[in-house]
Length: 445
Image (cartoon, rainbow, N blue to C red; front, side, top):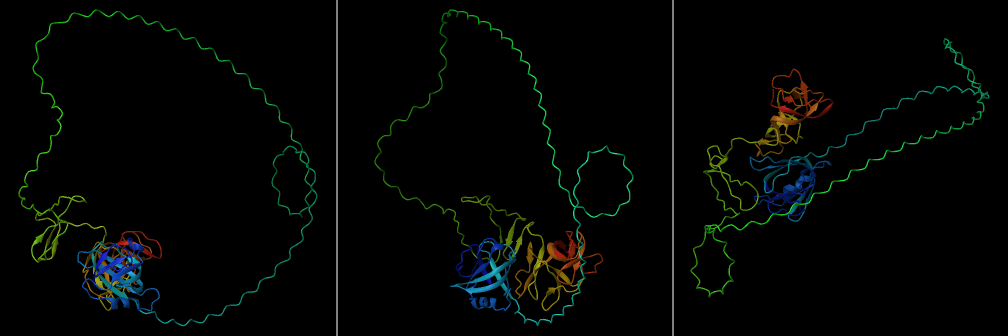
């Protein structure tokens, strides 16, 4: 169903055929506001109310918001947890799964995938019997401690004799009682410090010599006689114009002249567009933002152009921020980004469940740079990376450059001897552990 996206985040009716988020940062969005009718004027309220029919307590289903045009790259995935009707619009409570924020006024399409109802709780198995605990051994009795002998007085220290050979370790005798501590002798007085010698006197500085007197200035000579007058020079350039005199009184108003012809209409920011089915068209560019900018257009044979008859956009080259080239397929249920898929199931593709699967189709893309078959209408559309680098769920240790095949549980694993047709691509990273997510280059055999 087509809608127009608005970057306004106000909790209100977005207008006929409108849709908006409650936050300008896509990872912080918790509600989506959708008008009761789509862009074609069709009332969709009966459809909205089915979005919370599942009895699953963690997820009612997944809402896919994609670009309605084949050239668009918007792919937003949301986990729907509640649906609330408001006046003229619906509030959809969601949690973010993946995608980037659409641009303002982008034309988008909606698809909803309902999760299955919660299954009945299985019966709890009987608890096994607890084994008997072993008996604790008897603890031996603790012997009594002998009394501590009295401490004898400390004799004077004799000279140290030569070290004899170490005798055999004798048996340890009983501990005698600890004797009383002898008194500590008084400390001798500290000797007086010698006096510091006097410092020798500093020698006197010699006197500065007197400055000589300045000589007297000589007398000024007498002025010479005035010379004869020279010839008259040429006339100098005209002097500057004097200040303007006071303004005279205003004359009587003349008769009004005839009205001139209407001037050409100036440029307008509004465009009156006409639908066409033929012709080649070229985009107009300006060098900077702001008013009164001069537009520029390039119309050579290799210029950026659009053919209305063939619906073909011609450019010399394109660049993208994201990495992989992807295509939309019909899946049998929602699959998270990084999941390894294979051809099969009851639609076109399903999760790969065979180790080294030769029917492997690719990996669910996280942020594709270009999506082919983007307008596919199906209950569970899934975007699969066909070539380029893409985050992938892996199992087991991986070395950079390893060939990657299906592990049989929706993840990939390294293989030194893969079968023909089973290779997903090659690893871009080293990984040590049981499971995780790394980048691999799909489409590289």
